[in-house]
Image (cartoon, rainbow, N blue to C red):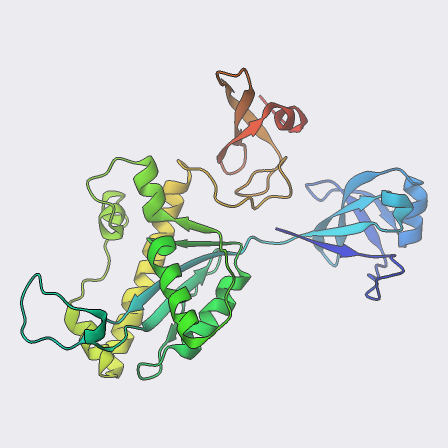
Length: 321
């Protein structure tokens, strides 16, 4: 993800003030030091160049010479905002004449609609797992807060998140009249597991165990019943259970990611790795379809991620042997 900030633009009131500017290599070796923006402009004399600079100890990318520097950009490389998330939902409370299997329960038999008991989430690169919980059966504030969190994410990772969690959150947002974005980029580990791998089961617990990552916390339906009676101990157990799922899913994701396509491009343009943003690749394979169109599969030299690009893009990439 990159953030473009205008400077030296008469229509932009937020001017970027830089004192000493160090022109550096990607490895942050100093090439030249400038004492002002004007000195930098004079040095390049209108030529369009993309350079790395250091400002306040941070490495940034600057495009100089665009439209004679009147609308140049300072490009700050930002960490990707990948979110791992999971929700736990209460069952519907219904009226029934008798217990048993294969019973017909109509929507009119619902006495109390299911809702979100809790949600746990974690940002990529951080250790802390955050949690939100309902207030005595009311999930309105929880829904409002998790939507704010989701709106910050470039990508959301969850097991069955696209088919269940996301739709359920949207359904509760509809119920509470809470605004929500129409689209989110989701890497659903259940969907990708089914698409790419032949496994005996696609449940999170099985996949984690299969990969030697451990198991989910064992629970029974009684835990959900206790949460519905606002039992504080049960709520703590539920949050612990949900948070463990988030941590387990994160580990499963990074095991699977090496074998699947990227859902979101986290780099700075198509000449960089979609996973880590690195700009150096190795050619792995040349692909030719029946129409004669050439595509190239390349591998990032930093993170090992594979990606397939057009031949035109490949010719512009930094390829090493």
